[in-house]
Image 1: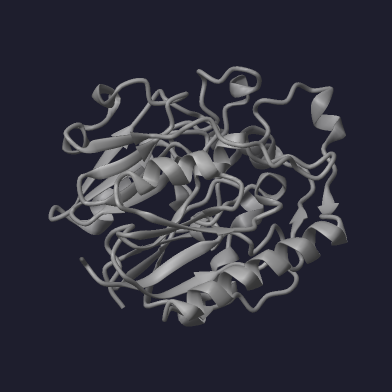
Image 2: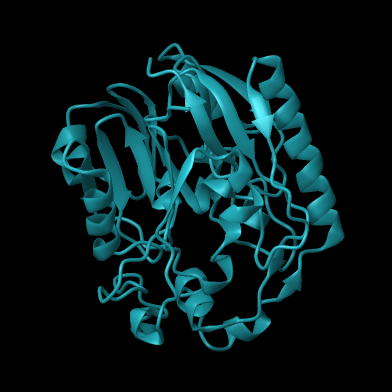
Length: 324
């Protein structure tokens, strides 16, 4: 089941589930990775425990619409099987990196997310488990209210799979609150010299890459202009790619008291093939820009992508794509 890039014709994918989604009890890992932008007063307002049932029901309705669309495009869809996660199964992209015939369970820095991939592991190719039990020394509390200081020290590798996007022989790895340089080094060692793991630093700390950069096809990418000011900040393999600069997103809001993503989650698209992507149904300005490059857009609902912290790229994990 090969999958080495973000745009090849999709054959099979995991799509997440909102069932059982919850915010776990606050610990050091959750505090500094997810909530470094909150001061000590604001952190007391974070509601832990299960998400409201309305959020779960509506999110699952939208995921079913998405699955039906993918089935109509000839894509095989598989789903998680755990209805009682410690965190959630909404974003399978976060916990596993698929590359070629390998599925890498990454050493996620939030402790409650360890073992999350087991909810869909029966659908994965060969699993290489890089997970670790992280010590308190990994976490840097100086990051709180300081976006220039990252949450993770370098004394152990730690990263979410969603810190990475793939372009065949070149992978782009965002160094952020959810991925340190040690993690990039471990990934490079794991994949070997035939693949380049290229780090991007100093552009966005909160926290995954797929609301900052999306690869649309070989040589064409979508960039977030509020974070990527110039292609010169990118690693050398990507500086000559053509860029679509994402227009200001339409804010679809979030459930009161629950906000886990900025409005830029609305550029979190998912490619069915190099000529067709799925985007949130209100993002017409983005659709117009993508259509200029011959990319058709399926406009689908994703009402709680800000609430739950995941758009169409986040809630998927592609298992089989043509190289294209």
